[in-house]
Length: 100
Image (cartoon, rainbow, N blue to C red; front, side, top):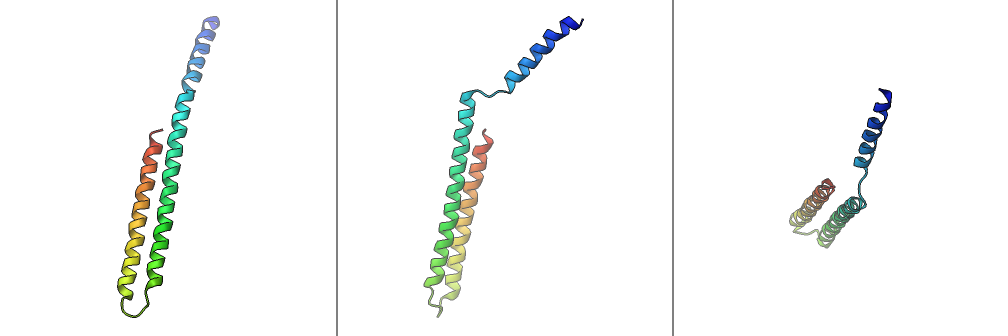
């Protein structure tokens, strides 16, 4: 009985090992998706940085005499908008990664 069991176990082990291996094409596809997601996250970071820089410029241009409240609102709106946009970009990157 032991002689019959060895080939069955060998075949089962081989089938498991082969099914666990990704093809080169699948590896390439996953690499492309990972690179695409990384690029999207980098763009989100740039969007966030540019939004903060724009808000800072808005605040620096305020002479501080009359329109301080509107200047603060404009800067805050800019920050909120760019943060929201960057978050959307990161969520999109996560969805790309989920395709792997």
